[in-house]
Length: 318
Image 1 (cartoon, rainbow, N blue to C red):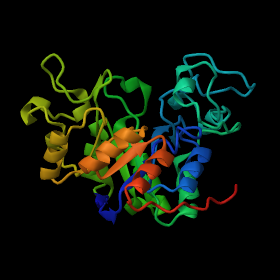
Image 2 (cartoon, one colour):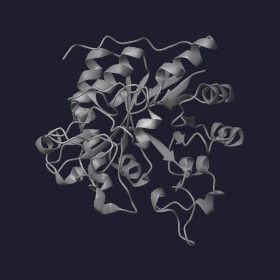
Image 3 (tube, rainbow, N blue to C red):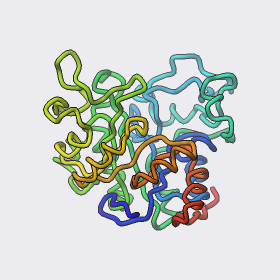
């Protein structure tokens, strides 16, 4: 099985979600180091932008009280401050290296090992760490912007440009993909940074539907495309947008939609798959890779099927 991601042939794509969220603090240098040391093909991560224009690696538009402590060591109260309201120095005063006990997050990730002192890293710091550890590891970088809540973040084109520029400065454009649920980011990249590979995220379940029309109007997530004009098919929408990589919620993926994506020439990378039986089923269907919080479990499933594994990387000491 060979995936084509960003123009590069590779074996099955083992993507460490937010680094290795099931094992180490999400979107931190410590988490990415853990994923690299296990052996992944790709580091998946999220991005936002600070008040002083720095691209940082962070999932939520505001600091998450479930994983954030202030300079005094106490857990912050909800709601946390918005990333766009803090400069980089202010943001990095907070510790994001441990899950708050008793939260749903803690119940979901009981095997996560804390790293007190972990900070929200810049994208450049993550790229530097990974490039020093591995000459082949790739990057799947999400722009976290929200068409239904534009006040939460910078504009989609601003963040997309910031990520693309960081990749160019690091000389890593050819090893990276920029993904987004908000296809306005991807439309801007297609028009202005065509050298950057793009992945089209979709969700149609779990209370978050980015595809279906709303009250007779196209979904705001699709950058002007109308699902009804494309048979309400996510693969057909990706193809209509000029995409070659589709990244659906794994719960939405069926053998039929995978077959349709194949007919359209799409690479298919479902998210976020954390249990071995589902991994095995999707691998059996023929997906090109899997985005997972538990790359250790995915490696075990691949090994049990005799499939090649990405080599572990030696992460330089800080």
